[in-house]
Image: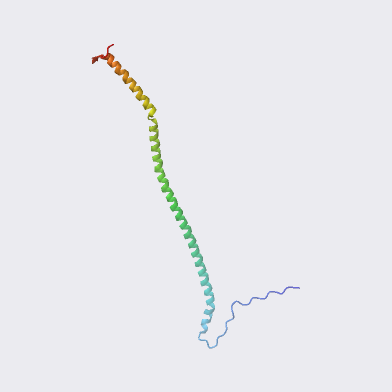
Length: 142
């Protein structure tokens, strides 16, 4: 059995009714037909304006994120510049440490003191025993 054909759609706009004795002049009737078209255009303009506002809001959000990212980068650069100063100070401290490491330690100083004391005693005994030629003779008997 063949299926029945779909019914034709009803007209979207109702046929204008004739108004008898209306105060509206006959020339205003085409303007009332254009009014729905004007409303459609107005709604399309409003939709486009809304889309433009949404795009603007998205761009504003992107620019806000970019600005925040730029600020974070600037802080990182400032921190890096600060660490560069610390790196220079660290180098100076390393140089000073190497100079301190090159100085004698307590053991070396103690050994030098002992050798100096022993040599002083020996030289004192020799001067007392033999004297200094041209200044005085020996004070101790030979």
